[in-house]
Amino acid sequence: MEKIRLSKLMSERGICSRREADHFISKGWVFVDGERITELGTRIDPSRKIELAKEARRIPAVTILLNKPVGYVSAQPEKGYQAAVSLINAASRFRGDDSPLKFLPEQLKGLAPAGRLDIDSTGLLVLTQDGRVAKLLIGEDSDIEKEYLVRVAGKLDAGGLALLNQGLSLDGAALKPAKVSWQNEDQLRFVLKEGKKRQIRRMCELVGLKVVGLKRVRIGRVSLSDLPTGKWRYLGENERF
Image: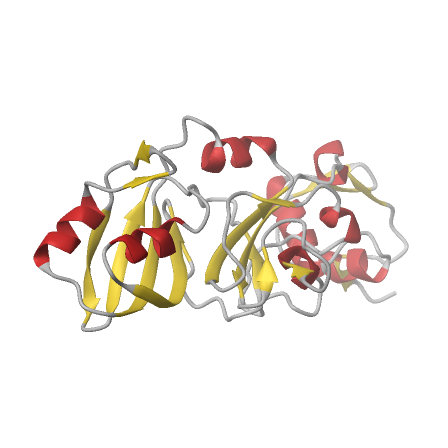
């Protein structure tokens, strides 16, 4: 009988996807008739028994990066609005995602946004099942930077720019120092370490500006990069916020 590539056979048997199979093989988590297989491209007789190590059988807590479009709310929506999590499905996964993970409906269970991005804003939204990731990004002691590109209308003088960087208060409390600079003639770049409700829009209003477009492009060391609007991908194994 002709031998078949192990990853293909695993996919045909419904064990996992081919990408997952290659990942499991590289980790040493695949056994054929009791023998550990670690070489990618291995071909086997299709009658042989395939088993996975317990590490591969666990469904890991996932973290997903979404380029949220305008019109979707980050958390629980009010009547007539849709939650950003409704965009997470197999069809909307970014084709350039090289994660070996296969999308499973179980990954939507407990998947929650780690931070706000209001309905009128676009860009990078993190959704996670991992409490450690949520604590890192939105915990009281979080010191992770969030970067935004903000298109504005109105006139801002040098004093206003200084206030945006260090000198404004919201809700009766002083804001943490920010990094705000001109990106081009009508767009500002904001880097913040906090995320009060509609913070950037309210900051701009205090200095006479109106926000006409807001996009989050980075959280910590993870960038939006070329992720298209409305598409998502998994946080990579080697990516860290």
